[in-house]
Length: 253
Image (cartoon, rainbow, N blue to C red; front, side):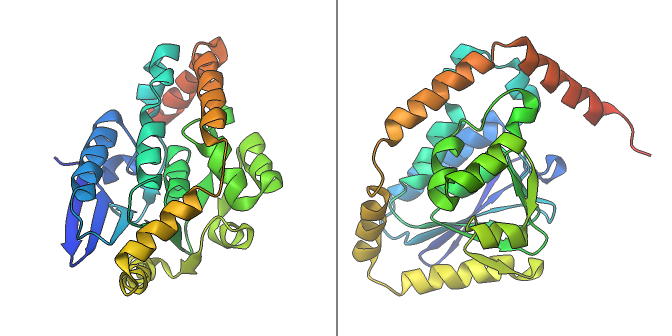
């Protein structure tokens, strides 16, 4: 089964992350498939906007696949698998819009941060709970989040690992639009259409220029990646992830 569904609506490409049985948890197969899809779309000069969404109603992406993370070591962490994908989203020539229903946690929140615009439903939940697993949001999260919502709000979310609702996400600037859950994709399409009405080259150059307004990202991401690699070798990381996996296996009453 494909982990990424692709739909073309004129110059807009709609990509649906398709692992609803695990709330679209981001695993290596999905990362590779999404990267390949984006590479193919980038070669298509007719694509003027991309909408990224999750299958089902429960999640955009509920986080990375914890079983894969628990088994990953420092060398694997330094490969920055998710980080490279999110950078590909961020630097994709055309604007990328995240259409978010349900959970956008951990890597899912980081993926949304890498998009240019974010539309969410009223029932959406956001958070960077990585410190609870003995790691940090190291797929660009410590770099993009403070730039988007400010350092104080970013520290609040990252250091506490707390989950926030859609209203708070809108208030602090984490999302651009909040609509009823059943209108999320429609709103994202409308936003894409608004962009597609504009000059294609102007939009692409505007995005390129806006992305270039921040300097020092590579240094910051290198530091974050090294910190993550150190954490991936710690006993606490393994203990916390194993405890998380054990809790998942327990039957719910």
